[in-house]
Length: 277
Ligand code: AMP
Image (tube, rainbow, N blue to C red; front, side):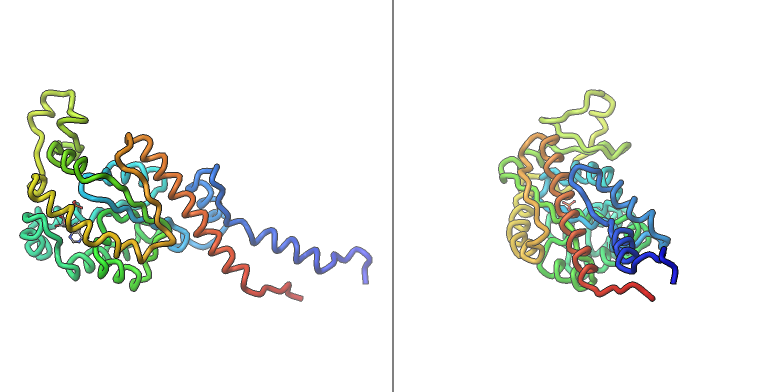
């Protein structure tokens, strides 16, 4: 036998070094890190590798603003259950006709209706490849159970906490520009352009009575929903200035993604691997 044969344990060591590498570090950008690990693979993007995020919070807690930042930062598909239902109402679809009367009264749409809509949407290709950000779902215990039953387990669940009086104040001044979809607040963030100001519209469920119903609904369900995701929860004070909120939200998601990645690495390390021949 040649005296230059490489010892087997050295080959095994090289193998171990090559096959590791799916780690996240908090200082590096999560998307870059994830795509680096993907680019080493010959497989198409794996759904298990794509970020899965939920954001919860009372009405006008700032979810919409944070969702814009999260989807830009992490490249995930933003799914707002409220927006999906409003589109369905506008399009006069079967789902829209069922949802409308509940939405007009500021009440929750029946669980089976919204569960069906969201589960179907999550199965689509873009969500599977890029990951998803669920905004406004799950809102009840049954919706949380349905999500987990469909094996849609989030990496992070952001909860924006805002006192009721601030929520009421924000909702009463909330307006939308129908041309751009941009949300303004007459008190805190009014448009500077007069033309925009005159075309602003108010959401039909954004009045003081309906907001109280929606806050009560939120409070009645949120603890039960959170109990399904206790390992993934990140609580953020949503009454802080929006820049501070987004910094905490992004950092919280990175931490949860790092921890989810560590768990999956540990799982794969638990398997037994042997050098061949
Ligand atoms: P949002 O835009 O999230 O405030 O939702 C607007 C309205 O859509 C709510 O007041 C409910 O009537 C309905 N809705 C949105 N998401 C859900 C959900 N997950 N479960 C039940 N109803 C929902």
